[in-house]
Length: 381
Image (cartoon, rainbow, N blue to C red; front, side):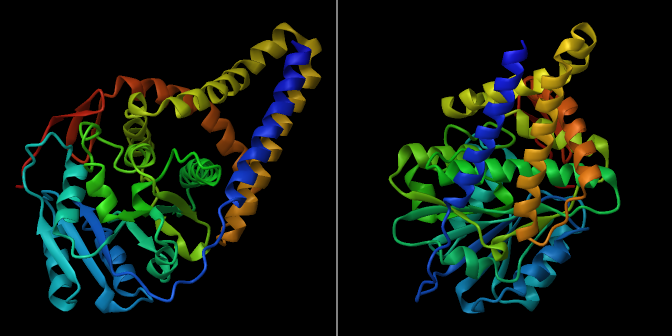
């Protein structure tokens, strides 16, 4: 057991080296002389509290207005989302609002909204963000330069804005971990993860792989499941934009209940993940189990305290410096004590949410899902 613990620490260091190397393999692209016109899809359901900030960030982009089309797709909102969006469309000619139509193809609501937005788009490049997000002022310009002729999709940073609440810091660190893993996988040429709040691709590529066909029944997955389809079915290159200007910020969850629901929704699609990601999850689960049961191991076999302590220190130190390094690039702080507490909590809730997600029973924005699939569709009041 002692040898196993020492080996586990060494292997973890190697994994971190592979992670950092993979992220750094994503090279910044040269500036293109010709800027592509883009269509930004913003699916929105009951987002009256955040839509103003999102649309303000989009109309303030440092990019020629004539090359931007902003499509807000109202997903049967029962609040003032439609009214707010229509008001912006009257003030800005490049903003259009459409009402999502009832879908008969089996797509879940958000995927249906995105697909209908893409069908209504006028440009070759589709950029996706959420109604509770605020892209950097140079977001379009930064992502745009990555679309060389052989590039089909571009993923980039999603940053959860941590506030005074400890839960928001936990969410910020947790979310950033997924982004780092996704960036490293793309750097190694094995794209696995993306986030729909900052995911762009060619319209022709989306249509070429038949959009969300085959993955449309899941309540989540308009990003990573679509990315995995793109990798398998096309010869286009996938890029990760390292530029801080390519980042999109989003609000943290307001309550623990909302946080758990969000993570459960994400976990509900894991049955559709590629085999590569499935194999990747095995060592992650193994490390989590080792960390969870380490107090019991320490009580039963105190002679293993040193290698066990080394393993814990190795994990926390490596994780902290990786997070701190890349978060600093984006102008974010990483308090040491808060980071350690957040990691301990993450070790506890990840297995629980993962198992609960496989069950796939949750509610999100007034809709009920079972096994990750929509149980009840609500209509506009």
